[in-house]
Length: 143
Image 1: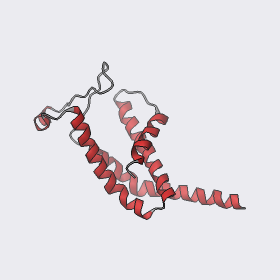
Image 2: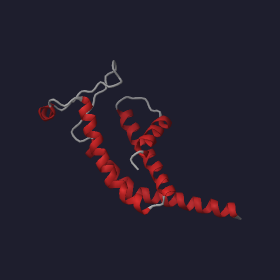
Image 3: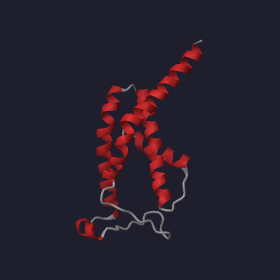
Image 4: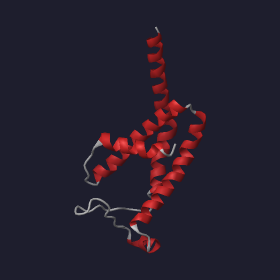
């Protein structure tokens, strides 16, 4: 009977997390990413897949003169951290640790899928499992 109760409560918890994620977190993720990557575009060349960045918007180029590709990365990171903190801090306060961690895992998986879809449109290869793990590790320090 105990295993049946644990199974049902676990199922209810997972369903609750998915409903919470779909209603409150998911609708805010795309705007968060749009804001984080606002006015910054990257072009990855075939020769230097690692860190070959090129800004593509000629009208915006004057506003970004003197900013290295690493500086643009820092700008994106700062914007994302600010948006992430504003999004997740209230939920961290009201949810218990284990449930918040499940919400983080769900969110990391979704962010990974968005990232891979975007990368797939750019002609990159898709490795869902590895990417989800990386996003999970990178997001975990922000919680």
